[in-house]
Image 1 (cartoon, rainbow, N blue to C red):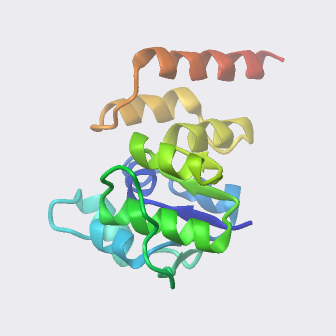
Image 2: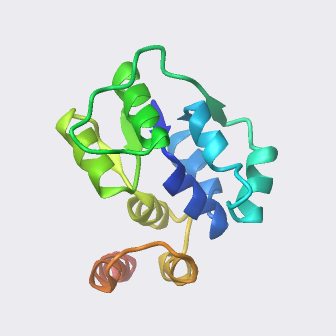
Length: 162
């Protein structure tokens, strides 16, 4: 399985101490070098910078070999590189949270997953406690509507009752 990640899902999963689910769900994760740079900047939370400085072996850095894909919207360099790499590799999934980046990737036929989907999939496989993960996520600056979070929590609770 080929899975490429942008910075946002990695950042938030590291912040809430759930980055380990990425390996369990996908095996190897590919990120463009610019994503490593973005997650290593001084303004990045220390826990994320520390994780990136001693990143696990399942996180592989790979630069796209093609020019960045043309996009109709303005994306940051990490999003653009992640989409370009995912297109180049015909990735099975692209992990990205930013709305415009997700829309552009979907237009290109890329399967898109965000932080919330990763956590919901991890919970479904017994790798995470979704209510606890969402509680931790709410303590960050991650943006999602409360109605979306509640919908995912209700689905998780119904699954656990079966």
